[in-house]
Amino acid sequence: NITMKKIFLIIFIFILSCSQEEAQKVTIEKISDRGNIFSISQFLDIGFKKNKEYKINDLPGSNSAYFGFIKNNLGEFEDYEIRFYSNHEDAIKLGKDYADNITGKNGCISKDCSLWEEGLKDRIRMSDLGTLLPKYMSYLIYDNFILFCPGYDEIEGQLNCNFVIENINN
Image 1 (cartoon, rainbow, N blue to C red):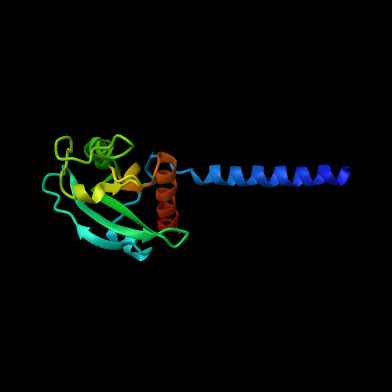
Image 2: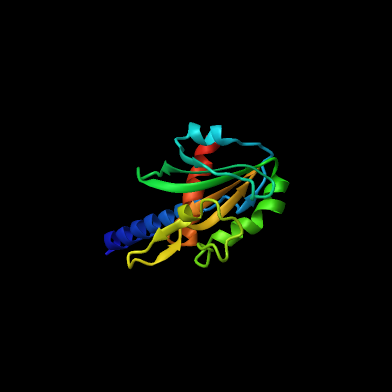
C-alpha cells in the first residue's frame, strides 16, 4: 500500500515537473528590449537558411526583411520571417501594426487585407483539409527585430520563436 502511494507520488511529481518545465519555456515576452542591435548574421550563425531577402520599399522604417527556415529542436524545418529595424522603438512604432496584420488565426493572407504584400505567399500554409491558413500564429518584437512564429496555434508559435531567441542568446 505504501509502495503504491510512493509510485503515485513519483508519477505526480514527474508530471508536475514536466508541465512546469513546459510552462517555463514560454518566458520570452512578446515585446522585449534587452538593448541589443541584431542583424541577419546572428540568425545565419544559428543555422537560419535564408531563402529570400524581401524588397522593403513599402515596409515603413524597416532596414531589411528575410524569409527562410531553421531546424527546430526535433530536427524539423520551420519557416520564419524576420524584419529588422534601426532600434526597438522603431520596431514597435513602425512594425507592430504590420505584424498584427499577418499573425494569428485571423491573420491576413490575401492582397485585399494585407498591409504589406511582399512575401505574402510565404505567409500561407495549407491545412490537412486543403484550406489556406496563416503560417505565423504569433510574433516577437525582440530588441530591433520582429520574428514571426510558425505554428498551428499561438502557443506553438511562441515556443518556436522562443527556441530561436534562446539559440541567438547562447
